[in-house]
Image (cartoon, rainbow, N blue to C red; front, top):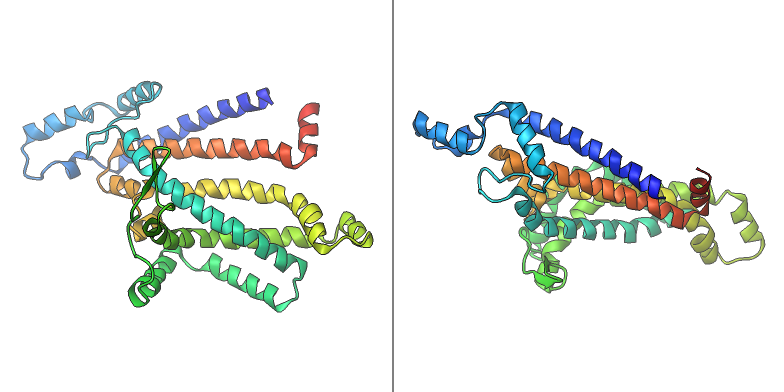
Length: 325
């Protein structure tokens, strides 16, 4: 297990290096942040001073080398537009994004797995066909359109839910969260549901496919022949054997929820990392963009490592394979 973790860490370092280089070169090629940050009426001397102050007067490879040198000590640069550390900016917005992603994934798990089991156990029933038809809508409808329709229906017409913002927050272990008070929960509900729809549909279809395959296996037929109740067959035999692909998808999709919540955060004005990224791209704030991408890559690596470790808890065959290796 130690060798496995060490190998994954080395792979992660290589991935971080490659991603940092690609993003740094990509942002460098887009344009000059000075053209956006400095008043267009400024004279050449003022522009030159600002360029030198931000370190943009050096060649690209020199700027990247200095970035790497500081990154090894945890310094990913200072925001061009706000003149504070980029990591501090991202960590200030991270709790909002993680809370939104956690609530969205929780909705998808709580609804998706039971609905998928129902649709897989009795695939020809009318309610199973209704569930599968609903999952098609979840795949097909664009996130931004669903978000706008939610705002129009639940905020404008019905007036049930607030349309934008995070609402009041409550401190939990020093971290501001929204779900511990009613106002924050009302602000959280719509964006979390909007973010969860695609993942919900994915889990429904994945669980249904695994359930239909498992119901045809010999161990299920034997359990039925023994007279075990369907609840026990599904809960003990079927669900346990289809959990590995489901856990894999949940791990990967949770990382994507954090990384790609940009559309939802923009529509609902949710003050998370995605909205910060959009604001930074608009002003070509290179340190914030690069720091955001590197932190997201680290999150993906950690999540994938946790998923791999969970395999050994869910399936003894994985532990046996590792022992042989």
